[in-house]
Image 1: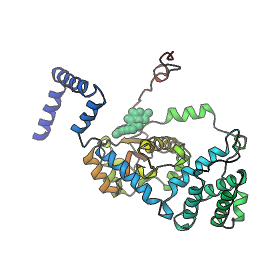
Image 2: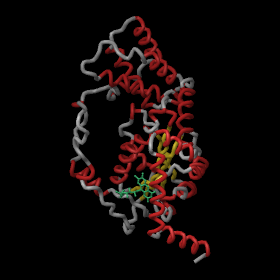
Image 3: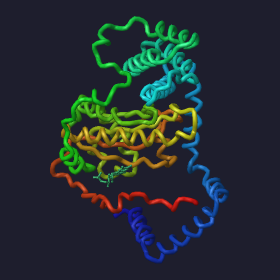
Image 4: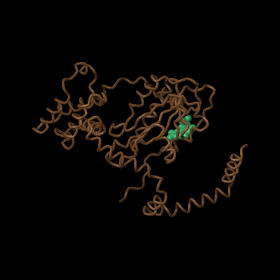
Length: 368
Ligand SMILES: Cc1cc2nc3c(=O)[nH]c(=O)nc-3n(C[C@H](O)[C@H](O)[C@H](O)COP(=O)(O)O)c2cc1C
């Protein structure tokens, strides 16, 4: 054993001693007790560790700046257009529906639609189609005065002549639940899938076909997201050199990163938001999507494991350099994907019993 490893081992054994652990616990309790006395002391606590939340704050602010900057760029208006089209859809399905609605944001929505249409090269066809269909439904539904009629004309000019092929497809505007396709997946089948999926860390030495990843993404992309903004990106690496570069970064894949075939870096994008109050949304939305993606991988004989990405400055810097990240792009987690090695060990990872997972109607008595 090398000298360094001997020292490391001694330090580990020292830190594991009951007396050392007790002293460390006491110290933590004392300091945290003081810092959490109230919000002022908690704020002081964060000042004492200025780097703790530094990158997160920078990401949120640069994201806001990028959001506003992008309003002037035709191709990049999608967060506002997405959110507004979503708001229109919700208003369209309200019961009862008001004869006039969305007056406070319809003009900026039409503007965003016009700007978006001006740059066909950068347009996401799915957003183009959805926004067009919803705006069409809006102008059909709303009682138009002169202002709305003028906006309607602007919309029709921007939309241009409709491709006759589109009329044959399902309209992308709100529909009734009864129009949803029949469900052929049973609860038992879904439970079986959930029980079968486990974090797999040992993979066959066999590349993952991109078509299968895309198939899984078709499921992942159907997940819910706040205001349908989908503020995240799957940054996928299957080039062995890049996989090595990226997968070797997180601490959590140490010991098995060398056998990862494809690695996904889930990146949250703070430039989708004009307000810091939405700063948690990318993490939530990305996680919801990733879960569906992982289930889909399982049905395609692939397996996966999430890899933790701590908010730790030295690692953040390395990752930003390795894959090229804007300051408002935040790594949420990584994911290893591959064909599971049949003889590879899989932790059982027992789940909580329902009684420890859920509660019903637990709340303080209502104030009188
Ligand atoms: C956010 C997150 C971070 C994780 N980080 C790691 C990690 O760094 N290394 C690892 O081997 N597994 C990691 N995992 C996998 C968990 O250990 C695993 O999901 C958990 O033990 C439950 O096991 P199961 O996925 O097989 O049900 C992570 C999972 C999640 C959701």
